[in-house]
Length: 135
Image (cartoon, rainbow, N blue to C red; front, side):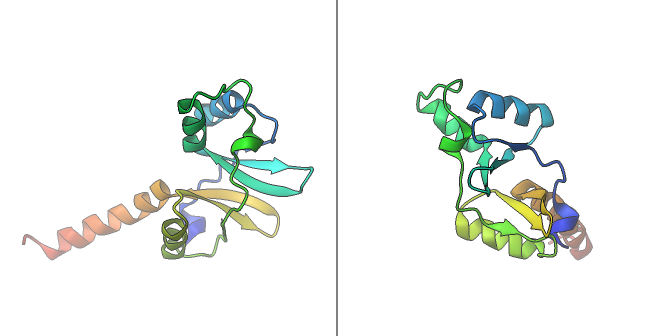
């Protein structure tokens, strides 16, 4: 199975000056765990995740003053829609993160998460276990 088959095509893109509270509200409203941060000043793409926001708030930072740019991961590993889910899982495991921005020639087209991968693999595992019969 390929990344394009598993990814979410709901891509929230925010600016670097969004506050953490604004980012959290937008992510919560869409029920997603990550947002692409586009900084037109650098033409760069980054990612901010629910964990980034949780870490900031948990350490006492003010979510109404802290901006996304201060908490954005900018050394991002991007996935291609044609990657296999195994390639995506390997990149996530190697990098220690749970989301990959999926890019094609036009820019971000999706985000794939560990949850997306598990959702795709879980039915296959159930069928395999059921076919094998009792131990």
